[in-house]
Amino acid sequence: VPIHYLDKTVPFDQLCALYRFADSVLITSVRDGMNLVAYEYIVCQKEKHGVLILSEFAGAAQSLGAGCVQVNPWNVNECARAIKYALEMSEKEKKRFHEYAF
Image 1 (cartoon, one colour):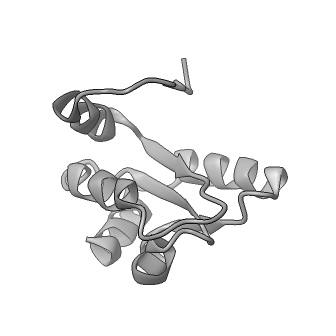
Image 2: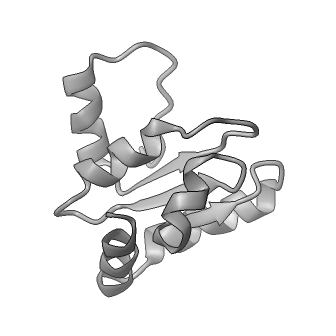
């Protein structure tokens, strides 16, 4: 299954395992503070270099900048294109994104 949606609390150690396993994560905050989920995902991807797709409205978008694919979460087509881009990204480009974010 390409996408798993979990609408429940997950213990932190299991959450870190999910972050580590994921090829990409989509964070679609429409109004937010810093959003630590983005940073947690980046740290858990130290060796795999998964791609962070992040709302341009999330506070973390300011500091992660070129280390993530930024989207307007209100634009469904843009989000769909970002998911496709992230999943088809070359390993070299994934590594470049991750090095910038980390």
